[in-house]
Image 1 (cartoon, one colour):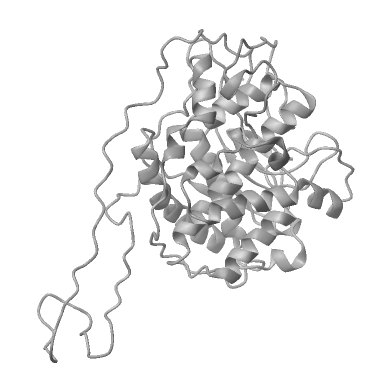
Image 2: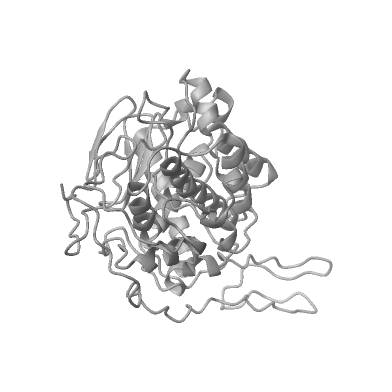
Length: 405
């Protein structure tokens, strides 16, 4: 069934990947983790792949079916055209000009404050410190601005190109980037309205981080709307009805959803940590980035072409990339949000605790293989993102299978 607000191209499936189980606890038996699924394994012998993920021909399944308990795309997968010139995305626009450092005012003696409004004077033995934030000239899109549907592959070659050689991987997120929201002193007791207001401000900060990188790569930037829904309730979205103890990205409307009781899936110490909500939403924002760059649709197609362990590995690759994107976005905001080593260690610890194995243990669920990644690997990819290196370090689709278990 076509998702509301989504007009598929002729011959292509409706909205790819409504939100699945999100961040909820493992379910019996279909749901096993949390975060938006999808992905494409680089490993040899994965389905019909050859080198660099170039496919030799897709098996045409009768339908996409249920994906980890989420609503189906509906209809059979498309018959992709065979290796004609790729016709996706747009040419990369020229990078936006970034504001350079403010000139230092050199004085030899005490001077009166002028009409130009300088806030302080330089004094002998002290420096005038002016933070040099990046992306200050970038106009952050409004949540009310229209956004096009997420890109869907037209050719087989698009799938390998978007997953393995995406232009986004050539970018490095600007740092430091300004964020005007303060820390959540007591995240476990904040009211729903206050939480939504604060987290929407955080999403705006993430958009200031990611927008220029998307546009420089030739993709469309936008600001998703974040919705907080009450503890113990379900939420109806364009991706269907989703349970509490959850957080997810919905590809049909390209928005983010956060259950007020999501922190209950964490151990008590991590659930009280002021940075917990930020890591969760930075991860879901990572899925929004995958949506805009074609990674989401391409990987979801690959999920439909595989079964069993192969399909689960595909899913883990997309989830672990979102963990890495989360770390990278948080690195860019770390100076402005005063995220020091203590907070970075907390991000890594929380990432470990949301591993498939850790969740299964806490919720007493038997699980042979998960769809989001072991705690050690979720921690690994979050830590890679926190380095702030080029986004190529987040390319989980060329990583060895041992790093995406």
